[in-house]
Amino acid sequence: KAIANERKQMSSSSNSPTEVISIIKHLYDIFYNTTKAIFPQFEDPICVISSQTNKSDYQCNSAMPLSSKLKQLNVQMSSLDIAKKLVENLPYSPLIERTEITGPGFISIFLTKDYAKTFISLILNEGVKPPPMKKLRVVVDFSSPNIAKQMHVGHLRSTIIGDSISRLLEFLGHDVLRINHLGDWGTQFGMLIAHLEDIFPNYVNESPPIADLQAFYKESKKRFDEDEEFKKRAYDRVVKLQSGEKNSTKAWQLICDVSRREFQHIYDLLDVKIVERGESFYQSRMESLVKELDEQGLLEEDEGRKIMWGEKTEGEIPLTIVKSGGGFTYDTSDMATIKQRIEEEKADWIIYVTDAGQATHFKSIFACAKRAGILDPSKIRIDHLGFGVVLGEDGKKFKTRSGDTVKLSDLLEEGTRRSLEKLKEKERDKILNEQEIIDATNNVAYGCIKYADLSKSSRNDYVFSFDRMLDDRGNTAVYLLYAYVRICSIARNLGEEFNKQMPKLKKETPIVLDHEKEWKLAKVLIQFPDIIEKILRELNIHYLCDFLYHIATTFTEFYDSCYCIQKNKQGEVVKIDVSRVLLCEATAAIMAQCFDILGIKTLKKV
Ligand code: ARG
Image (cartoon, rainbow, N blue to C red; front, side):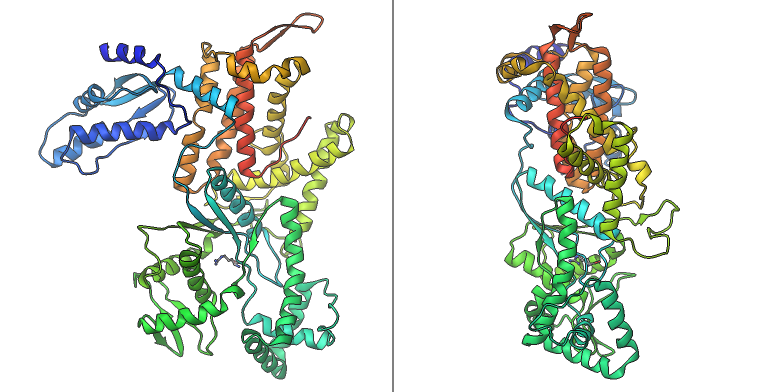
């Protein structure tokens, strides 16, 4: 009790942190260090901190596992005694109001309001800042569709997740290189070039009008399979292309341009920035890499192929580094790629965003890169962010009614059509002007498509349903976008005079968190850095969506029971609770930051 009192007194002094920090990380650090000091026999002691529960703000659950660990060392100490000892030895923290031991040794932790007040003031006066961390060079490899083939929902998912992860890392101040690893190299180009020569013999002087590259691909594939002479010529063109011969290179560029334009259209609609660096970029690097691997004695002959094993563990498939005809493969290019990113780009962290089906491929790449001395996992973090399949509402792989792959531009168009329909249904077109309705239509449509993708754990498959994603109830982008506009309008509706004073009010008004619902809302907001840490650890952005939804629902509770603005019968404002209005503003600021990380554009009014 004495300790608790002492802490209370000290917390009112000006010891509160001046930066936003992850509370869970802070608590982990002090509990970890305390545990280590009490039990020096543990080099790296167990420390378990869980986030907010119904009963307490945070909780330390280490006492029980510590007790059993001690037992293994023949030391008898009950978990309750361990919990007591931890609490007694805990250093002062400006975040902790008091602790309480329950059950067999759970330590409930209750937060001071001071830190939350500081946090809210920081947000109001300095904007939403990231928690401090070491700045890294990060390569994010995402989207990466294939030339002359359809960009499909899998690539869309990679684009949306990769963009959001990049946005998060950029917000944190990291140096992010967003790379589009286009499938622009490989034997299929031989048949495409040979076919182009036949259909548009004048391609060198005049740009061929290829409208439908998929059909073009199918035609050339058919000839390749049926016509021996054509097949020979196709092989010859691959060799020519890879050796940099002029005409074949020109033909290849023209073909790539057609796809490139289609892809760019999608990136523009979704406002995704990405640098193109396709597989072709690595041609010369693949040649030298293969030489190096051979010299290191890492390649094995296997029925004419050259293969490489990583860890030779059970179920592992070796990489094919050189095909029996001498050509390179997807494996070769990814080995050259990882080397380029580490050695030339000086990456501290590399993230690949593709469907989960490529997990084995990346596992082998990482293992082989380690074996070849390219990758040192103690220095470089490397992640394959594999995501689940996009399913149709029938639970089967997402396809059109006729069973074809869905064209992304058609899909996005349908999204905007449905979004406009919804807005009209709600008669928003009567309140918004022409430009506003266009913006609202697009922001809602693309916001919904992105949110539906991001709000499910990316590891799982997910069902693509326009009806579900455009619903304005539940955890959807529409619900959150509307909630956000309403929160923003609280202060805005107080008029210009009031808003002019806002900077001064933000600086001078003490934040009050006396009402239970004010405190509850504040305790959600201060979790922002915790959520970021969690996403960085697990690379799963859906925690940010859950957080946004949590903010919106907690805000509703607060707004329902705490008046911010009192009006008389005539509708005139008679009383303003400035602290509460500021709490609304802080809520909106954090929500805006979350939307920005998700790549979702907000609405001005609804
Ligand atoms: N083009 C590949 C596909 O469509 C994705 C490439 C991912 N990136 C990589 N470095 N392998 O599946």
